[in-house]
Image (cartoon, rainbow, N blue to C red; front, side, top):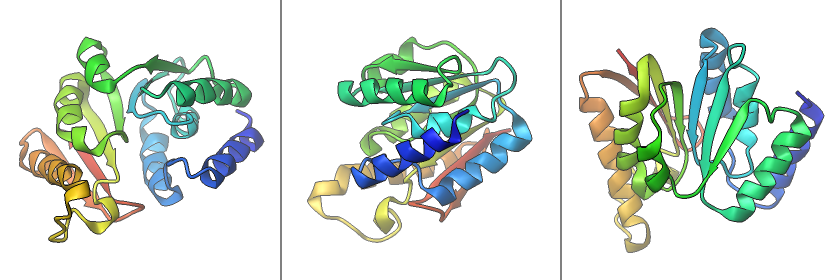
Amino acid sequence: MNKEELLKIKTKALDSHIPIIMDETLEVIEKYLKNNKPKRILEIGTAVGYSSMCFSEFLADGGKIDTIEREEERVKEAKENIKKVGVEDKINIYEGDAVEILPTLNYKYDMIFIDAAKGKYPFFLKESLRMLNSNGIIFADNILYKGYVMSDYNKHKQRTAVRNLREYIKQVEENPELETEILEVGDGLAVSRKV
């Protein structure tokens, strides 16, 4: 993997205000990846491909990452970036809306990373649980959403996102099949392991 190229991609994304995974969030996930070497990862929300490329380093031999992105420009950029870094054999991009694509997937995943439309997290969870291997893990990024989720925030603009993120937390905490921790790293990370 071309680490130098990866760093350039990260810098460019940050300079262009494209939301990519925060360093401290990535650290938590990489620790898990190092210890578990997943065979198959699903990522909901590709952006420019940065997190996928970071995760790809820790895949088991022959492992694959499926990632979903609906914005055409982002897909194009992600494909170019993945080629530059030299991991195109490990990452497969589905272009389109995750809400439409997820129900058509029938793979089993060791790890699922949710980092897309905040208002859709409960739907993403339902689909993820269907495809998660036992002992698999779901990471949901931005779960505390600038601190709004745990406060009495109720401004109209973000209300749906905040309500649905709260709903996501409630579902993962109440699901007897999951052990969940909410970590205050980055913008909040929900870590749910299937037991």
